[in-house]
Image (cartoon, rainbow, N blue to C red):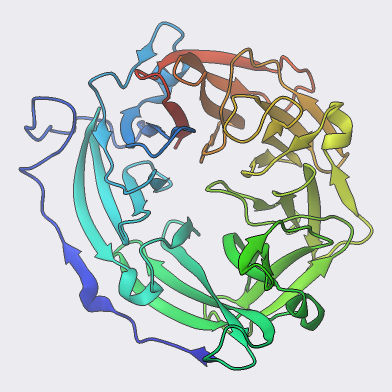
Length: 435
């Protein structure tokens, strides 16, 4: 099965809100932007996310000077622009920080905001994507300053007699839907839907792909991380998936055609991540991909295949405890990145037992940073590389924290400084990114 839709340009709706700005402030009067166009790059602190349930998401802007200032305090208590989302918002920004993009996960739309100042954001465009994606719950990834990718997977259990689920179970089919978004106009460009290339042996056992995410583009190919699931035909339920490999979906970009996969048995787990970048292309054009359901480890993709010579960089083995890195990671450059890692000896995803680990993917070293906070990073989405350093908004769940500025040139566990103080404002809120 392989079919396409025509671009749905007419589903984009221009929304003029110059006189109707929403925030926690009582003053909804538009604010005049007096910033210097040559020297100012705004950044955006985003808060939301609770391990105990769904939550609202709020954003506010900040200057680099404010982020670096240890005497500055940011709070979301009665302050911040709410970004509408049925569940926690999926946020990106333009490279200059002047525009914020959001996927209303569960609402089936994407939106574009112009940043004015403080907590003031003008909603410019919103687009309903449910018709193209076939769901209110697609995921998305910003590719560059011009385009983003929407993606979704739907599954169907196939039986020998399609009208009788008591007949012999054959396999579970997974259908992938992809769509490219023009971020300037918030319209759908290329879109495609196809059967995920399934493995005959895995299919007969009920193993199937149920999620893809976090694509990376190199040499005209787009590489999507993959999560699999096991369907137990005897119980009619999805059982516990035990991975014996890793897999990545590959399609041509931007045509979104010629789907295929690459696999490796040198590591085991999913590669799709969770709201956070999972794979990064380095300065040499190679891609380093985090395994996000299994032991914390990193694989290398080179020349369109998993690099067998590189093997698997097992982060867990260097930490001295059981660990998963099931969200994603942030790449700074020259092989150095920082990974949110869960200490599974101390708790599950809902616990505040997360660390930030500095990794060197070239030399396969890992150092747990001395961040003295009770971190819950399951939904942490973004960190910003500024002047060669990584800026993260880190706070204890429901408590206070700091802007952490990690220096990739330092191999020390104390290789960072701190800037502004961050307050959460509620008992179970958490910062989910500095954009």
